[in-house]
Image (tube, rainbow, N blue to C red; front, side, top):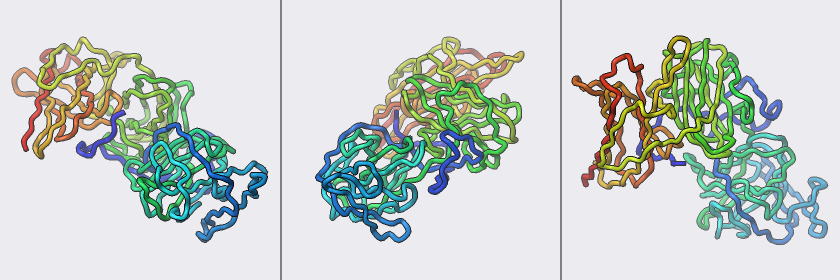
Length: 471
């Protein structure tokens, strides 16, 4: 999936911490009344192994209330720790106690050995490992915020040489390492505090449960009806919702495919936001809110097992809403465009398989909802240098259209969206652009924003891409 790039402004969204380090949820997947935004995105799940040295005796860990080390002993003969009857793990300094909170560990890593490395780094840097016994089922955030060097953080399942759950070096958008992942009650996890490129220093470990989203609808039969009456009121964005309550729901893609996320309501005008990752406040993929139809829809391609967070905000009012998630089973993007090679076609040759933040996905008529067609194109920018260099994507059509530019191939964040304007003659024109960047993959899409019987000159369109380089 394409990563976010700083040269393209994205629709704004609030990023609000929402972890409760001391209070567990009332149950796994409980639908509580508190939905608040959370810290950043999850790291990728990867697999690796870890080498362990011999048994450690008189290992220490930090008391989070005093930051002074307290002893936890591992018997070198029996391999059993004094914190329980489970066999001790010879690679760890200690078992974390308490198992949740800030500053669970503070340790100077220069005095430690270089015993392991993760798939994302750590080779050549001293490291310290700890055993974490997961208190209950749920998603948790493990991070090194408060450390004074460039850390690497990874977690292994069950043993010193267990499979890697996740590894992170510099979580996107923050200056520390962070893992967000689901864990099971009583699961034994080896958490390793490591350094990047030989770095070391004072390492800090914090572990907190995720409480936003408060509900997980993965695997459930949809559509289902929810309510925003008891929802939180902290989310906002380019598609509206400031000052009105919202609900946040987590969902996991069961298979790779193109998925449509739709929120409808007779009680309020929904604005639907789709975010990457299993916690609120992850990178925004796109938003949509059609005030005239009481509906919001976002379409994106997802990988099997990929987590997303669905924020259903309100553009005004409270009440019930229905959420549906459907795999479309259509190809996206439809065609590949080449720079400097104009393309023309008729919008009637396309199906409904994309949305944008600046256009409606369809219109109601005689009690039915008629979806607009969407033309989608893959394009790879050639890469330009020079402060005034870039590429313009110009769409000319016989109908008013929404023209959007996404990073990636129907799977990345929306970068720009514009509505075409009438040129005073026989066409509507809309343009999106990219600046002087390395070669990158994009998806260009266009869709009508009015029914065919309202304001159309013709159903034809053309796309032309013009690139320029000015040193």
